[in-house]
Image 1 (cartoon, rainbow, N blue to C red):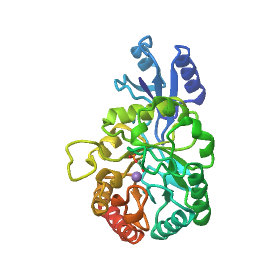
Image 2 (cartoon, rainbow, N blue to C red; image 1 turned 180 degrees about the horizontal axis):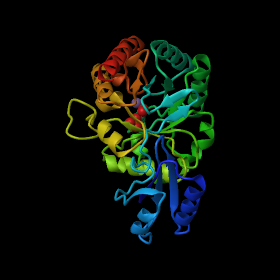
Image 3 (cartoon, protein in one colour; image 1 turned 45 degrees about the vertical axis):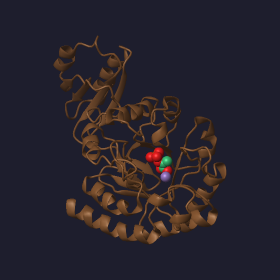
Amino acid sequence: MIVVLKPNTDAEREAQLIEWFKSFGLGVHVSEGQFQTVLGLIGDTSSVDTDLVASLDIVDTVKRVTETFKCANRKFHPEDTIIEVGDLKIGGGNFTVIAGPCSVESEEQIVGIAKAVKAAGANMLRGGAFKPRTSPYDFQGLKAEGIELLKIARQETGLPIVTEIMNASDLPLFEDVDVLQVGARNTQNFDLLKELGHLKKPILLKRGIAGTLKELLMSAEYIMASGNENVILCERGIRSYSDYLRNTLDLSAVPMLHELTHLPVVVDPSHATGLARMVPPMALAATAAGCDGLLIEVHNDPPHALCDGAQSIRPEEFAKLYGKLQAVREAVR
Ligand code: PEP
Ligand code: MN
């Protein structure tokens, strides 16, 4: 249930109403907007008399929310969530470009790519240290050492770092990481999501391999219900009928998610297509569709990349793309 308060409601009356809702055993999510305050009630609201609440003089409107996702629901939080990573703002009209290799391979590789993408305009550096590979015989990532190398690259460039966590038991290694990524294979690892909900750190949550939008939002809800509201959603393509492409990029997910949720939505055209030459056109299309940012795999030597070389663009291609992205943003503004 959501309760919209009248403008300029007295803070004491608002607090009393919140306490009253809590006496029913409900959680109350307060969203203070520029013009109105919205109280989102979480839990079983069946014993709350809607007509009684609507009749209170400080209440503007009351609505029952039928969707199962509450914290992530735009009805609970009408304004866009803006997630802060240092000075960087994600969501709410800001455009964030996250770039870097699939995996961290060496200090020279990650620092070199970090410098190149930073010079081209990127806002954050990505790089996998723990890699979820389909084959156990493939490179599994440098793990703890990879995280240390990402920190060196951050120090050299000032770019915040994003890297994937696969197991909650590794959390101590991620203490100094700026944004934790949950990969498509772990989107429904609910125990991991609950653990990440106990942090304050931003979580980049990817859509599951064949995940629906509702499933993605319910995964975000797991993190948020445990207390961490800093969730960035990522459309990375879904398994469907694609034969020549790795996945099918669902661009309509962008405006649909913006309708359903206040969380920022970024698009990953690299895993969505699996082919470097498809990345620039789909990055531009995603930008035109209104995404809040992009996650793009960039490698200095794609043919020799230890992971996802075929879908990695080179730094000079990234720089060229970055310029076009700004033109598309301008055109659709
Ligand atoms: C990645 O970002 O390198 C990755 C493994 O992505 P996904 O989980 O979307 O496959
Ligand atoms: Mn990858």
